[in-house]
Length: 195
View: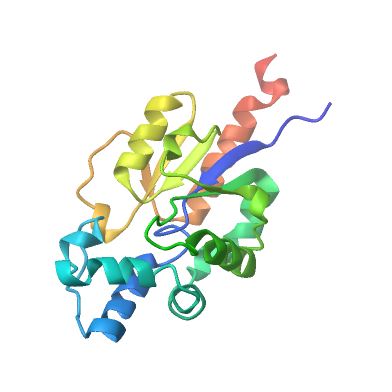
């Protein structure tokens, strides 16, 4: 009987794609508003209140997903290796104010990462994802997941806007580091090592 593969959950925005840059470009294009360097996870701290609703709705458009939101090249390069090692799910929060968000997000993930819809979970309750390892750029998502799955490994994907975080999880933005962690996890679950 073959051992089961490790199960890994990966957030989309901030890990696979530069959502902040895309939202910043959209804000400039639509409202001629330039954001300062983003140093907090929640973009609402920077977006003028009178533009928030319209901006978040526009983030659910085809234009946003097809023209503005670009995948991180390193993530694309590592994706086949990650899928060889583990059963990978994209765990992403949908944007309730954008009715077509899920459709465009699924299409974007299939185009850039060849992710089938059966491996995309749209949820705001990311802590409910059952897996061995979870990667996200939002500290509270990682903390919630680790609390719910103490036997798993949570990784905070390092970004300038989460630099102040001082939690217990691993912190990296290196796909080779993720690969090394997964290889150690793979070895640890091997029956030959537990005999």
